[in-house]
Amino acid sequence: MTTVTKSSTAKIMMFNSLNLADENQTATLLIDDFSINQHVSDNGVDNSATSSQEKLVSGTALKLATRNVSALATGGIYEFETVIIGGSFLKINNTGGSNGSSFIEYCFDQTNFAALGKGILLTAIDVDFDISVSISINGGLASTEFQTYTGSQFFKLYSAFSGDQTQFNRVTRLRLDFKAIQSHNVKSQITRLDDYRKVPNPAILSLLGLGEVELSAFRQKKLG
Figure: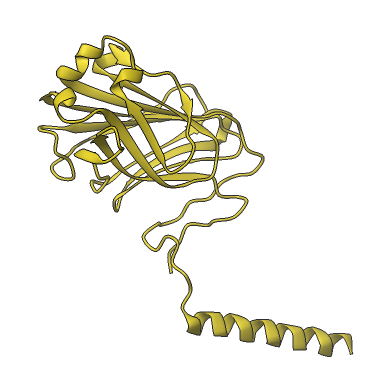
């Protein structure tokens, strides 16, 4: 079975949708369901980022959309910042010694966000390290400050943006920046995520129990 290694060594955050939403945080327009695959990983050997770009031919209600993903690690060659998109998840992972950063920027045909929602909604299923998020519109003409992510949803009303809020009438670019706000003492580990959070079936649990019994008997025999 392929799973995420979820222990003190795993530092990963996972999101499963990005939408426009109304004031009640109900999704009104799909920006990205993270079904189009993209994988970017950067090590901390220098100050240059690693990036890639994909056309979103599905999984979005935006027209002629492209998605640019960039990751920047710090702390040396053994430190990494990784962004993986696919299987309806956005996963951001960094190693213990890196205060890494990453961003996702969407470019698309002009869209009237103001007519379609009241804010931007990013939904999480798992966040186990401290990270801050900021959002900008049309190259920063309207933007938010970095805010620490808490809970299961990150929701920003248009009214909370500084700058020119009329830009929401004619959006062509949307960018989300992520940065770790503290480093970790351990390296992280990431594997395939398609069986994420699956509980072992009873047969496997029974085998694990038998293994414990046999190991206990072996230890007693050795001591005797």
